[in-house]
Length: 145
Image 1 (tube, rainbow, N blue to C red):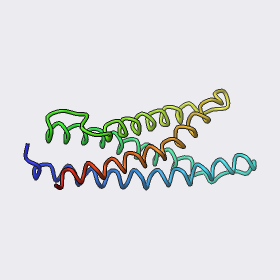
Image 2: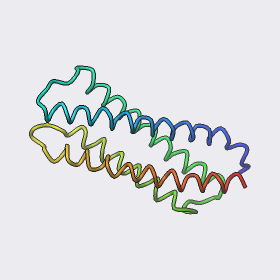
Image 3: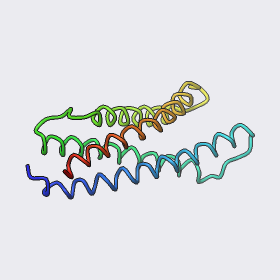
Image 4: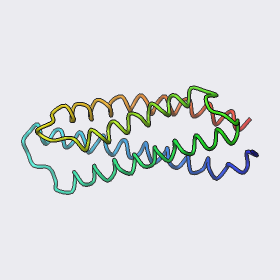
């Protein structure tokens, strides 16, 4: 397929990754705030949990959208997948986001493992976003040349 026909797809991908990273940092800030409130036994604002859940849902949706764009764009341009480390970085990020989302739904006093899994997967997700960003930059440079 012709690259210019994919420009709209790359624009959606650029906005999606940008908003995913913004959401990640908003989630980190709100999550740290909730964690500190829980440790100090002080109540958290009533809106904070909803904000955290909605922002997490938005980030999860954006990351899945990015997976679809990456698959369609790569197959459309190359005819197959696996031309760079970006595929593996992207799959790692998608996996970590899904683990985080699943564990978030399991958090309760009866399942203490869920909070640890949620925090751990989000900590690893920072490195995943760095890796996908670096490899994505290389992919963009390939398409531009």
